[in-house]
Length: 225
Ligand SMILES: *Cc1c(COP(=O)(O)O)cnc(C)c1O
Image (cartoon, rainbow, N blue to C red; front, side, top):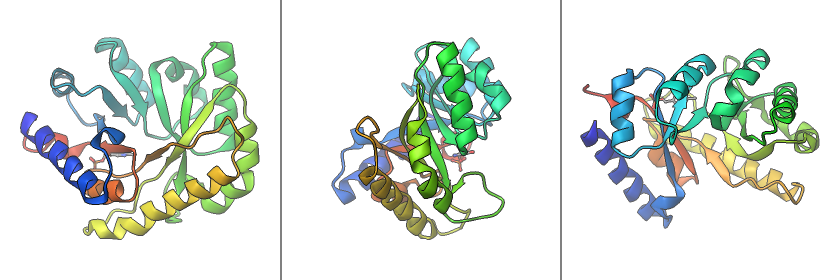
């Protein structure tokens, strides 16, 4: 695992150098949804602090078991009835895909005296089977999203369609960045859209070139184990 991590870290540095960005501006979020607990512990020993789960229940179980310095990210679909259990445990929710869900998060945050940070998940490619807000819906509801109290919307997230060629993801990532720039011009003063969560094992180099600040990597970390 140390070798995998080292290779990925080198690829992140090279991608940053290629476009004149600082490696410190890109956070590697290790996706542990298919990883055994022993592997997750090893990652933490190797210094990885940002871990992601796609199922709220597994996130909560692991957060209770593993060291408290871990920052947990939720990247999978969140049902409104799971918000209560997961909110206190998460550093960042990447997968807010409706106004109703954001309102639910806001309500629970008020009860628990929290101020969660969230990303809005966008279905850039318009794939019918994918989670995420359609472009047009987000644009038309942007003022309503921003008006939800007790939460900080800090950026956008997307998943590119699966493809053999990472270049196929480039237009998707570029479109997400442009959407962020567009929403930022219409943002209330307290809303700072600094984060772009995009790029996975197969396409994170392209995502960094297009401005990703959070890359979500699972299989590459654990391959060969
Ligand atoms: C599983 C998953 C990842 C990681 O995918 P890999 O290809 O294994 O790196 C990233 N983002 C989301 C939303 C996922 O569900």
